[in-house]
Every structure is written in structure tokens, then in C-alpha cells.
Image (cartoon, rainbow, N blue to C red; front, side, top):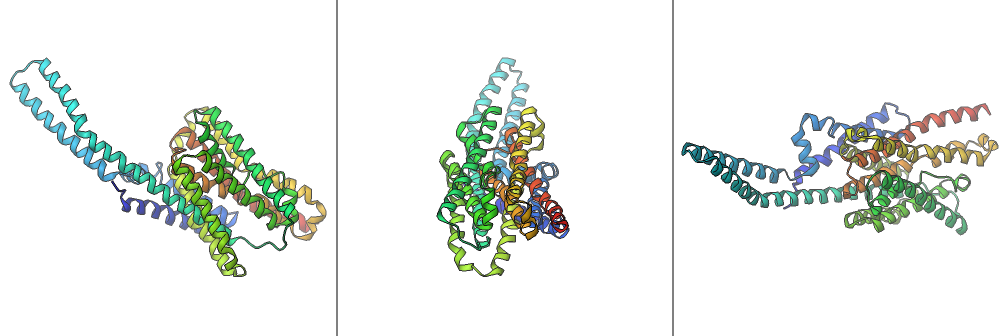
Length: 419
């Protein structure tokens, strides 16, 4: 059975259009944090509107068909069940008129139950195959959007003004990998201890949450000294490490999705030299990556999340708060350490704002994109208590980070002017 293209087009068309429109509107309304913040917040609002809270309550049939698929097969199953039950009721009515015994009626009902199960078995199998095809098609689209985001991010990145020595590149790359491993390990242990999650799945979830590195502590001085050149080596090394871990420890679908995402990054780096110096291309690539990539992927994970699952017990709530701290707040610790390493004398040179942005921005966007891959692969079910907690922690951490960056920059600018 093939999945229904119209349902997929409707679902992702709504996700992309609603998330992009809300993101642009938030951007024009002056939401703190600029495009990254407006993309994350716009995607979150779109996910709530198109998720179980709004669309699911207003049109449950439409919401179910868009999220699990198999609408035609489900209708055929329900139609056949209704027909057979109606036929049974007619037969029972005839038997009752002939004054048969209650034992005979019970035997007839038991025989009918076996007949019903055998008759509906092919319909159920067809429904399962259709929904499996739907999940695979959804995963392919999500992986394509992730590759789109990483390709555009590689193209849109600014070229470094200075080249790094081989030793500096190696140190930054190793630091990025180590930071992801530390973060991924912590998240994996929390998920495995608090929920019955297999070890490999816990590592995959941890790798997604650790992508880009929330614990950006070790290379902060290097990034401050080398600017975008250092940030690029550190961030992309962390992204490659995270996708590599997801490919190694994930199942077949997860492995394929992670490799597709990495393929997008490679394509972006290959195409990068062709657009160097073309500022218009970079200006177009950045909003496309955010509003047509990050925003709909954020909407995708939020639209699949059941908010009630977070408050179903103490464990989901605790994990959500822990991931909020891991996904967002530690980046500010890294930024603070960087400013301490730079020293007060550098505040007068007007470069601190740019360095702060390098240290505190971009990590939540990467985490959200890879989290969408984990949900699409089936490793994490956002409707479960564990999945809802992970989505809430990562998405709220992204919102906290991106929306508080602009006020922090404003305060720092006032400090620089006072100096």
C-alpha cells in the first residue's frame, strides 16, 4: 500500500506555511532574538495550532489522518466491521424468533467473533502497512528538510577573516567532539535511568540533545581569539560527531536519516566556494534555512507532542527541566567564561557583541533539527511521557536561549558605551 500523497502534502504544506508566516510576523513585530528566535517561536506556535491541543480538538479525524496516515484503509476496515456486525445482529434476531436456547446463541456469538477476527485480519494488515508507509514517507521528508537546513547553513556561513593553524583546527575539532560526548552521555544516562529506554536509543536521544554542544566550555578562549573561524571548526565538528553517533547507534531508519543530514552539510560545503563573495546568496540562504527549515521542523515535533504526558508523573517533568538547563542555560555559562577570558580591555574594541553571539547562538537550532530526525525515525515518540519531556526541554531551551540573546547584547552594549 502506498501512503496518500494528499495527506502528506497537506500536513507538511501547513507546517511550512503556518510556521514560516508566524516566524516572519514575529520577526517584524520585533521579537527579541531576530530571525533564529522568530523561527523557533513561530514553529512552536504552529506546532501547537496543528497539534492535538487545537487541530486535534477541533478536527480529530483530520488530525489523526495527517499524523498516522492510512485514512482510506481505516475507512475500509470500519466499513467491513460495521457490515459484519449488522449481519450478525440480523442473524441473532432471526435465531431469537425461533426460540433457540441461550447456549446456542452464545455459541453463535463465539463463532462470529472468530469469523470477524479472520475476516478483518487482512484489513488490519493493510492498515498497518499503510501507516508504516506513511511513517517512512514522513521520515524521508523530515530528513530532506534537515539536509536542506544544514546545506544552507554551510552556504550562508561567513568566511573567516583569518586562517587557523593546523594545531588550532585540531584542538577546536577535538573540543567540539568532546563537548558533544559529555552532553550526550549525560542526557543518555538521565533518559535511561528515569525511563525504560534501550541503551542505543538513549545514546541517539543524547546525541541529538548534545548536537553543537551545550557545554561550550573548553574552547571558549580559542573561539574568542579566532572569531567565526574557530566557531565554525568547533560547531561543525560537534554536528558531525552527533550525526555520527546517531548513525552508529540508531536503527536502519535513524542511520539513513542521519547520513542524509550529513549529506546536506557536505553538499553545502562543496557549494560554498561558488557563492563566496556573493552577499545576496547568503542573505537569501539564511532566512530560507530558518523559516523553511528550522521553523517547520520545530512545528513538526511540537505538533506530535502530547502536553498532558509531561505532567503524567514526576519523571517527565524533572527530565524536561533538566533538558531545559542542558539545552539552553549552559551556553550562557560558556559565553560568560569567554568574556572573562577576553578581559575588560577588549570591551572597548567593539568586538564583544560579535563574540557573544558566536558563543550563545545556533546550538538550539541544531538540537531541534536533529530532534525532529529522532522523532521521525520512531526512536522517540513525542506522545509518550519521555518524548514529550525531551521535546519540551529542548524546544523551551531553544526559545530561552534565542530570545534572551538580544537583551543580553543590549546590556553589554550599554556597558561598552559606559567604558
